[in-house]
Length: 306
Image (tube, rainbow, N blue to C red; front, top):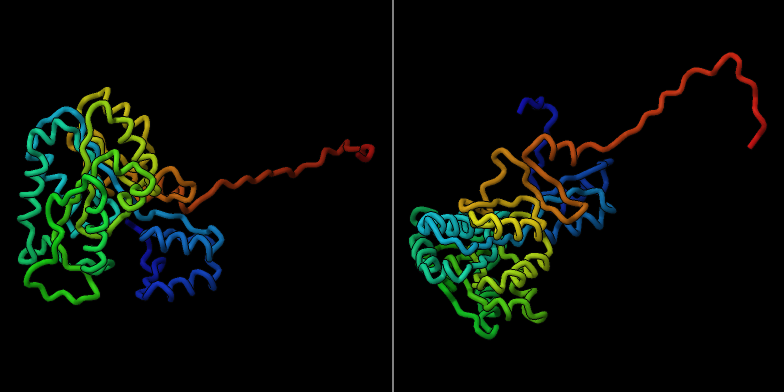
């Protein structure tokens, strides 16, 4: 990028070591990329001197206009399960219009997920969740009335991954949208797992406001996708959501950034962006005012005090 090499220092360490540096050295600002839990901790210990590009419970809404179903199924699989779901832009929840369900989309996503294997590393170790913790969360969601396992929900077969990590199949749990929105269920349904896991629900035209309510209630608004070429549908969703990086159109995805555009959350004054000159300026600079006032007129006479 043209930056002088001597302007960069790389500190390879555990979190507590980095925290010690941040809180004891005269550091004016930290830009943080990582989990929301750690970002909230850093904001407390630094008294807010952190710009955050943190986790997101990223949603995808499939609109009413069904087309190119094989492409959409492939993109849904990639968004949710590539890198075993360990990316801040992973598809965490999929809102499926009933037209897509009738066209067989969920079966195609299931078939794509079933092709993933340790042999070609399209599935792999989960670094921040154990297998037990992953399966516990899956089973908790399955206790919601009407919930069902679409696929996955099992430990990987014949693996040698240590118990301190996760070894799980790509998983999807269906939860009815009315049940999801209930106070006692929503927090669990909107819990992000840095793992190959997503919640799936379906909706009708008359349910769109429920979908938008769910999107608004989520706590971290990073990436999103509105998969539709229906202009009226797309406009309504975009006008009523706030995610910082939102893809729209039939090729919309939740992940793929930041090749050449802004990438970061919205709806939070602490949010930071990456990937563009605008993002860099927003994080690393601020407004400064200099008032240059140098000449006293030779005819000046002292006025009456005020």
